[in-house]
Image 1 (cartoon, rainbow, N blue to C red):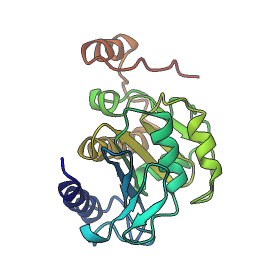
Image 2: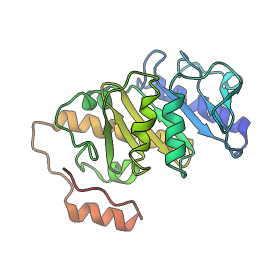
Image 3: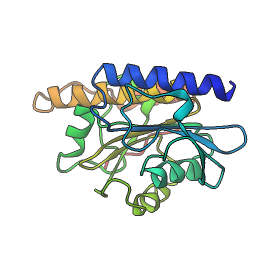
Image 4: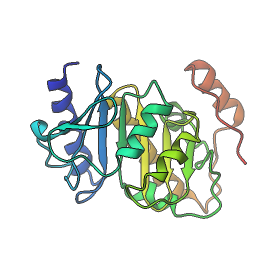
Length: 218
């Protein structure tokens, strides 16, 4: 896909996320890696509902700002994901309500924060990591992401929000939406002893769809 089309797609899907209340105000940020190794990324303090394709930030392969508006402060987060996950071509970071709510809860497994609730949670999100709190834009988040070793395409930042990567921007958006719905189910059913997918059912999904194996819960 050409850079011009990617710019249009980013703005269209960003508006869809905003219009559905998945990232309020000027929260959240998105990026796409280009064929030359550079990125397109959303500008700082920009509402995802009102992006201008021509004003998206353009960075080179080293993360240096080339043109467009000033990029999001979360560049270290995006850079660490691209560095540690070579297959990642897009990153979606939201402040969606239920994912943030789950990130506030105690006693979550840091390598598998949500139990296996639905097939599409497993297929699109895999094991969802939980990282300790870092202030927005803190460069130290990069080390925390690198420490995951590229084994997670879905991450919850404690007291902050979800980060999802995928091989395309559309796939990353879909996975972020799936993570939010899974988090919503978890909050709604947390005290109801829900029927989870069995280990055999999870293994069947992993085998059928050639997914990375999920780590054993702590």
